[in-house]
Image 1 (spheres, rainbow, N blue to C red):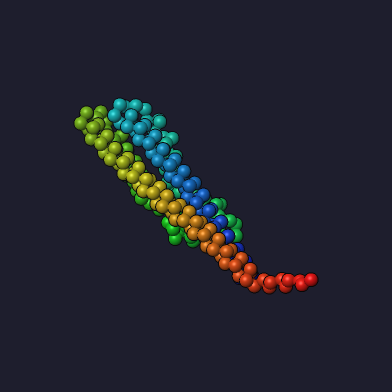
Image 2 (image 1 turned 45 degrees about the horizontal axis):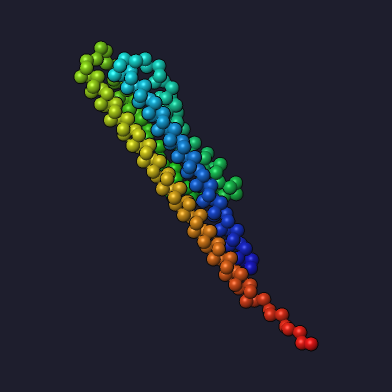
Amino acid sequence: MSVTLALAIVLAGLSAICLGLVDAGRELDDVLGRLEHEAGALHRATGAAVEHGASVDPITRPRTSLRQGVDNFGATATRIVHDSAPPYARPVAGSLSSSIDLVPPAEPIDRALREYLDQTEQAQKVKAPTTSATELASRMLDRSYEMLVQKISQARGRTHAAVSTALFGVQAITLISIGIAALAIGFATQETPATPSRRP
């Protein structure tokens, strides 16, 4: 019985870890979603400045927010995984999050963002651009933006897959726990001595 109890405790701990990873994955997806939103805001402001000569002031806020979000993504992800795990299992949760690829690398997004910002800078350096130069700059910006959004989308896809893996882990642990409980009840029933009937 003590073995069954110990196994039940271990399974409960694993289930809590997996549930924490599910929560962490959903929070990470929200973070990546905000990066995607800021990328869209940056591209709209940049396109207005390049194509129509609008003020560059609206570019500053989304560019700063996006740059900081990408730079801090690793630390943010580590904090989210740490805070979502039970206090007694945080080292295990960190290792398990790596094994299921919960936290996507920020490097591909960072490279795509740098390329986009380089294209923005080059487009803004052109003095009195011709129509053809403006069209070319717009196409290059669109291409860089599509690449940036693609990298963010790929990161979200990896996180979604990891969340599905963690959910499957919760389901598997639940089924195993039910099976163990059924076996324990069965063994306990077999080991219980039958009460002798009393004769009048």
